[in-house]
Image (cartoon, rainbow, N blue to C red; front, side):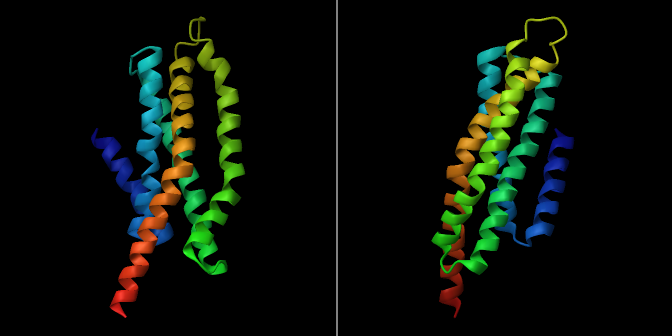
Length: 168
């Protein structure tokens, strides 16, 4: 548990160093619970056992979810300089990053389906729980990532703009 908390703090510090904004780093880390939802449901419906391979699956899943969040947020930040409005930058950034995010998720899912389906075969005791967690988490993370992250980014940036305008 302590190692997990330390890892999250290090990830947050790296994200903060990259974006120089507490709220942007927090939005990216918001992807982790979104991925966790699908992974937990996948465990619940498959074996109902949290094993070491399942935990390794969560670690892999968190990496993919974090990368997807970074892709979206970095595109929004880049788009703010090109697009006039916040809404335009969020919409164009989301549309632009939709294909890479979906292709990554689909490629990983198609590669993991045989591993998840072959859980009863000898030698798959490690691969199957890991694949099940990643598949479940990819499903929830990808779908929710494309809805929650743009919405939260838009609301927080709108609030930040409002505060800056009131200060002037």
